[in-house]
Image (cartoon, rainbow, N blue to C red; front, side):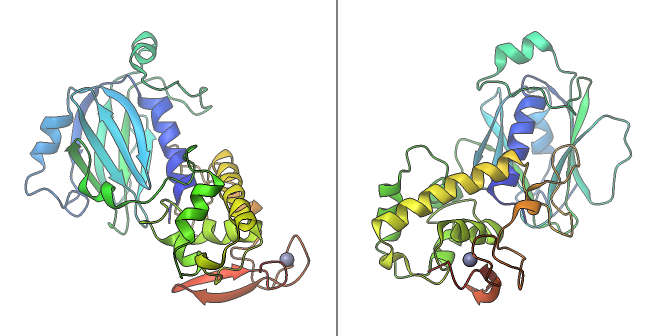
Length: 297
Ligand SMILES: [Zn+2]
């Protein structure tokens, strides 16, 4: 299940790979993927002939912003993957959308880039490419929208927003008599953190997952803030985590690397890298939760 680091990795790759290119064809075939549409010809009409200006992320939503003011919004949910391939690569099963993009034009891409262009990825493809949405379980979604989405208004703070400081985080959790694991998972409080990173963040902060927000001291809130920034930052640097199912793939179909650096999640019975106690697994907020019973208080 992609979380913020995985979605942000895909966003950065999309930004570097596709910004400045024109959409030359669109094939929105997945009925469930395009479930907001009675008629998918609207998707074709609003995307073909448009140029990609920039790629934003809010929580786990990706917005591919077009020069018309519309955005192609993608939510990967459980098993969605966005893949860039050079045609004529054969279509894999469960491909529910294909957007063909023109070849990258060096000057055009630079001129139109609203955000700084990322350093060139080793896999970067200069020729015409297809962006494909593959989703075996079909919980993921793609749609085209103008302006902001109503559901975005419900979302909580971005954990990597530079405006969110330790005091701001403390103010956010302090009024809530809810366990911190549940708070971190609640997208109305803070966005993009799922089961893996909630465990890793609380391990690094030395805070027990069941500890409630209203008992958090200022120094603990500062530790939690530091842990959120460090953990998510490291995970993005390692291009996200892919678990045993290898469901999460980046834009080029490669798995992430951060699972090798997990300290708590998925490590039941193994020694805590900090104190050597056995990592314990319990059920918290309806989810398998891993923590160190000795150094997380
Ligand atoms: Zn420990």
